[in-house]
Image 1 (cartoon, rainbow, N blue to C red):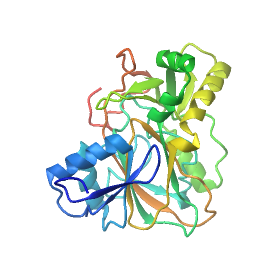
Image 2 (image 1 turned 90 degrees about the horizontal axis):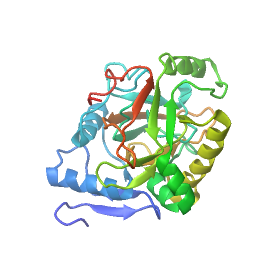
Image 3 (image 1 turned 135 degrees about the vertical axis):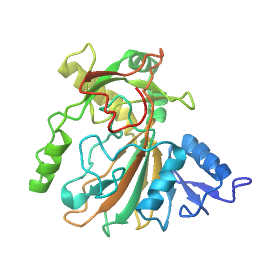
Length: 299
């Protein structure tokens, strides 16, 4: 049990992930508890809170304890009447079955993301979360030194797989209705811990100064370290669960393995800062605007 806070932290993965036991997120949390939860987040990267009795307002309240909230998404519609909540609805074709970090195609991606389960299938529909700092540490020295110098262009507009139905096609059209391209350092320095992590994932499409073929090959090699099994925790959902993960130093993936069964999560994200690389240089816009209607943080 954590001293003075009255809750337990139980590791659920060797390199990433912990369950927080004994915290009721629907209650008013003492600032000391919030501080300890944030410390646990920095250490474990992904935290699971089981069987919470939260509604949309409660999720918004909890997420706001960690900073100002973003809008739901730069291009996709929010839950009706809740401009800061993104519905992640498998029936609507919203199936994030690729490794990614949330909204890295803008200059100020979220600091943290919360996912709350509302409807979960009886099998499948898990969420995998990977520790990109552990991936960076796994790199051989020559590859790590190369990665330290690389920059990647992230975009929401690239060649996606063919949508499975018209709902998915419409969602894809909304997703790319405004194009964003942003250059981020391939190795991001975490603003709170100073850890270095591989800041890539599905939205990273090309490397600055390299052609598309070389970019694909190098990104594939680097990404393979992120998705090593030892760097991943698998979250099996039950209704009412909430997961909080550090978007600055993780990637996640939701396997599309539940057929036509319903699956509905609500996502709320905490606004972040402009990523910085090893040399202190910060991300910059290649195409599009500063997404100021999405994030309240000044670029």
